[in-house]
Length: 225
Image 1 (tube, helix red, strand yellow):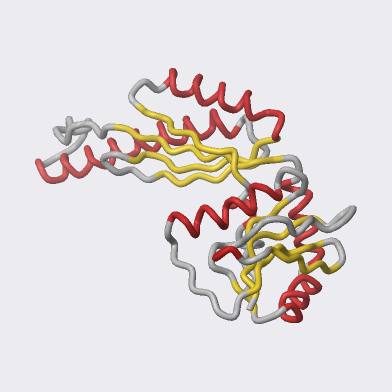
Image 2 (image 1 turned 30 degrees about the horizontal axis):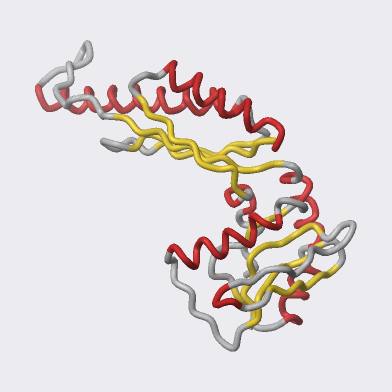
């Protein structure tokens, strides 16, 4: 059985198989055309989403992205053998090659926006009739205002990225979860933008992590099912 960590652009040549994967297993490379998969061999493998396993998976992808365009593969992905993996790489080579061009020289930065939701004593909007209807309209108005803040924060950051994904999650603590695909040379500029946006929204706390391999932007390409 092969556990697959990442797909790597094999041009001008496949990556080295240095390092170890889960349970200390040696890394190996299955290359087909312009695409290589970095794997480890196991008689059987059962990895849970625990910190040690997650970080081992991530470490392999991070080491590879130092020299190659990388598409991280979903944690826990296995294939039966080299022939099965080679068949997937052959079938989807063009798709993977296009994706490599998209992430080449770029990294992913993740931003979570925390906030303190306003008190629920909401002033009814003009035109509201009846206490129940006024309350519901007030809740809708407050949610719309929070959504506008989240979208404004995201737009300010997305302007400094090659691509972006975001999800507005209006809870008492979380307002926005987002990911940005940023040119490696522009990471400093993006972090400055995070600071600028944070100063513009004093009621929000922006938490930025990375740079990481482009997990968000590899899906569903990084799923070998």
